[in-house]
Image 1 (tube, rainbow, N blue to C red):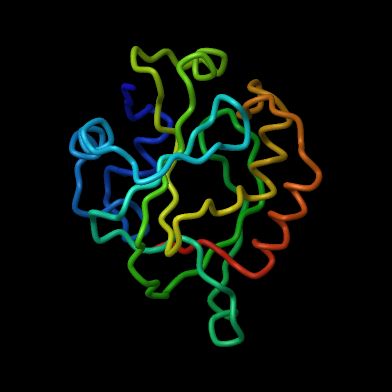
Image 2 (tube, rainbow, N blue to C red; image 1 turned 180 degrees about the horizontal axis):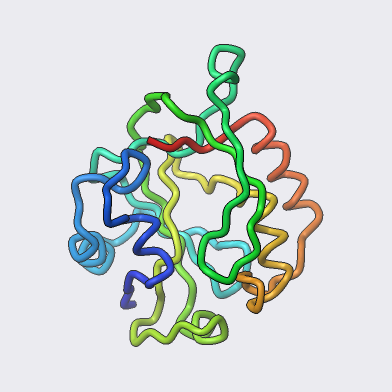
Length: 185
């Protein structure tokens, strides 16, 4: 199986101006090479048949992205309306500022099939394209954010994948994200 880094994922995982909450100590080319040369320790099914999650031990100094909300850090939560790409509808997001999360033990790479990416307007020559990556303490998927599930259900014209909303998965996501938030550094 061949894997490439998509233009969608590249600026999120490897921004032009490096940030502490993105992949560390690795160039996009090194990341892509590692994914193609190092078999994942496990492969998980994603939220749809075209989505696979490759679980790798963290070979970088990347930190966990989701952090539990506590009474001690709640005052550091921020929020705002943002879009991921030009043309997407802005949605309300929240994040921590000024925290120092632990190193991630795992990088869980989110892959979409070539066929799905073509439906969404991205042509690749590899079998799969990287659309994101979770940085976690456990080798399990961090639930997709509720707003991402909603965006996906809106369809590709609004920046989603066209996968209908799964009510039970949505409620599990809400349960997790009520008590966790991402951080920015």
